[in-house]
Every structure is written in C-alpha cells, then in structure tokens.
Amino acid sequence: MTGHIVVLGGGYAGLGAAKRAARRLRGAGARVTLVNAADRFVERVRLHQLAAGQRLPDLPLRGLLDGAGVELAVATVTGIDLAARVVRLDAAPYELGYDVLVYALGSGADLGAVQGLAEHAYTVATEREAARLRSRLTAARSVAVVGGGLTGIEAAAEFKAARPGLEVRLVSGGPIGAGLSPRARRHLRRAFDRLDVTVREHAPVAEVGPGGLLLRDGGEVPADTVVWAAGFRVPELAAACGLATDEHGRMLVDATLRSLSHPEVLGAGDAAAVRGSRMSCQTGLPLGLQAGDAAAALLTGRAPRPARIRYVWQNISLGRHDGVTQFTRADDSPSGPVLTGRPSALFKEVITRGTVWRMRHPHLSP
Ligand SMILES: Cc1cc2nc3c(=O)[nH]c(=O)nc-3n(C[C@H](O)[C@H](O)[C@H](O)COP(=O)(O)OP(=O)(O)OC[C@H]3O[C@@H](n4cnc5c(N)ncnc54)[C@H](O)[C@@H]3O)c2cc1C
Image 1 (spheres, rainbow, N blue to C red):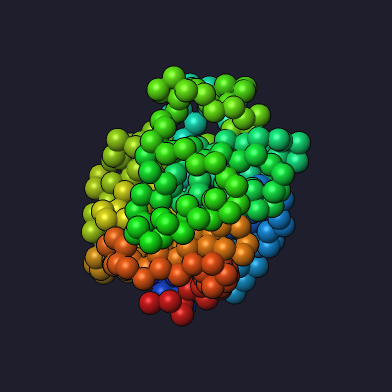
Image 2: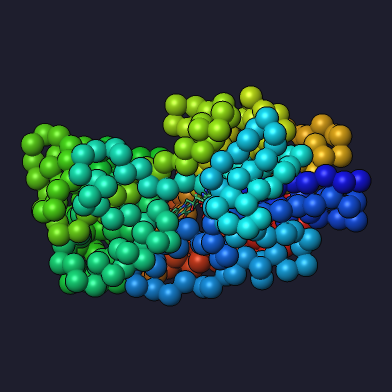
C-alpha cells in the first residue's frame, strides 16, 4: 500500500498523532511525515518555569521519533492547498503532498484582546516568549499577571516563589480558578496569602501601558512588567486556507475528528474545536493519538471511530513545592476530592514527566 499522512505541528497532539499513525501502518508501505517549526519538542506546560529562570529538559524531536518510522520536516507551514492536497513550507522540502492531513498547530497568546497588549505585554504561551520574559524578569520589580485561569495562577505563583522580593499581582476579569471546587479555591487563596501575591478578582482590564494596567472600572494596577495569560488564540492558517472553522479560528471537526469541510483532514489539540474539550495537553495528547488512529484508518479505507475525551483532574502547580489537584468528572466538572501542598506538587511533576514518557511510547496508551 502507498499513501502519505502529513501531520502539522509537533506538540502534544501532533507528535502523538504521527507516532500512532506510523505504528498502526507499520510494514504497510505508507509514509508518515511530521512537520514542526522547530527541531525540539516544547513542553508548553512548563513554560512558566522557563520564564521563572528554570532550565527545562532538552527534547529533540529526532530523539522522540527514533525508530517510530516518522519522517521529520523542520519548517514552518505557510499554506495548505486543500484542492491539490499540498502543504507549503518555508524550508525544504517546501511542498508536501498528502492523502490524509492532521492539523495540530496548537495555539499562542491572544495579544489582540485589549489595547496596548502587543506593545507592552509579555506572555508564557510559546518558548520564545517565555524566554523573552525570563530576561525581563531578572530586572523587574513588579509584575501584573493577567488571567485567573490555570496558566495565570501557575505563572503568578511560580514567579513569586522563584523571586520572593518581586511584587506580584494577579488580576482576573472574573473569579480566580473559576472551574475549581470551593475547597480548591480556598487553597489557592491561602497559597497566594502565604506567598504574598496580591489577588484582584472581577477586575477586567481595559488597556495595558508601559506602567501597568488600566481597568475597565477606571482603576489602575501599577507594574513594570505585564504578563498576559488570559486566553490563547489559534493560528489563522485553518481559516485562511479554507477549512471550516468556528468564530475563534479553530478547525471544526466531527465526532471522528474529521474536518466538517474537508474530511481527508483531521484536527486535534488546541487548534481543533472538539466538543466538550478544553485547550490542554490533557486533551491534546489523547486526541492526537486518536487522530493518528483515524488517519491510519482513513488511509486504509476503514471508517475512523468516534473520538472520546475523559477528564480526570486539573493539576495546578503553585511553585515547585505546592499545588492543587482538583479531581473531576469525565466532563471536567469538579467532583470533590482535592489534593494540595507538596503531594499535589509531586503528583503534578510525576504526571508531567509521565506525559513525555507517553509521547515516547504512545503505543502503550489506549
Ligand atoms: C504556561 C503554560 C502552562 C500550561 N499548563 C498546562 C497544564 O498544567 N495542563 C494542561 O493540560 N495544559 C496546560 N497548558 C496548555 C497546553 O500546553 C496546551 O493546551 C497544549 O500544548 C496543546 O497541545 P497542542 O499539541 O495542540 O499544541 P502545542 O503544544 O502548542 O504544539 C503545536 C506545535 O505546532 C507548531 N507550529 C505552530 N504553527 C506552526 C506552523 N505554522 N508551522 C510549523 N509548526 C507550527 C508549534 O511550534 C508547536 O510545536 C499550559 C500552557 C501554558 C502556556
């Protein structure tokens, strides 16, 4: 059998998809190519640690792909010709024809949300931006982290734990940790009190400037460094090339992860709008594996199975020695049990390492 599966994006979703598809097609004569902008796998879930000055494990993609039967193209995807079934790249091989395409380009920071963001704010959304913030933080005296979701909480706690002398304010348009149970939120409040992080809830930001934040109610939050962690935005490529997308530019997929407009294209991870899922590596890795299964099925003329996503916990680090693990129902709603303190921090570290282990051995995942 011949045939070519091309996977765009070597993150949690794309790497899992490529390795799983190659595994399913082993010995069948098909090709699987993974395209990624860099030659390294970026553990995005650790980027707040990078910004706080920690060293992250070096994970070359070639090492993670060793023996998997996946070709790697290190290049940026500049376009997709859906009619000709060709992907365009900014580096060799410049063009790749495909029979089945997996779109898993992830997400980045949403720097269009309010005025002044692009000029004045830093983020932890990509490795490059987190590294830029790391340099800035060495000279910073006061930081305003905007975003009461998991990324903002983790970033504010990590920066303060790493540099206790830094003045850190966490500012959120709504409540902090909105999806957590009252018990988990109580722990967050205690942790921020202990760390001496000032928390401002229900304070939507109107504008970002060189001296900090202007709030919608007219108030100001002074800070020499602003970190925007209030939501991610997906690449515009899916919409630009003509794939059906939602209002946020996420690729619309059916229950088997196939594009609603182009069924030979599958979507997974942050860049795909999968019903009942939230942007997370907890979603990206399992859906990536299932997209790999679906891609192999399509190439061999079989019908892909409906994808399933079941959540188990939300794992939040609060520096290296504290955390909150909120156990959840399969639909991601909080179910009661909460782990806190060092056991939670240790648990999160084990899960984060375990995720990379699963990327090395995706055939051992269901
Ligand atoms: C600081 C931080 C902490 C987080 N903590 C957690 C957590 O604790 N738990 C959790 O579940 N989730 C967490 N997340 C979210 C999680 O990291 C993302 O949801 C996850 O990375 C999505 O995986 P993905 O494979 O869809 O995309 P990504 O991991 O973003 O991978 C996309 C890949 O595509 C590549 N790419 C993009 N555009 C192009 C292009 N045009 N050409 C070629 N390559 C391209 C990128 O370089 C990247 O390698 C966190 C995120 C951040 C930023």
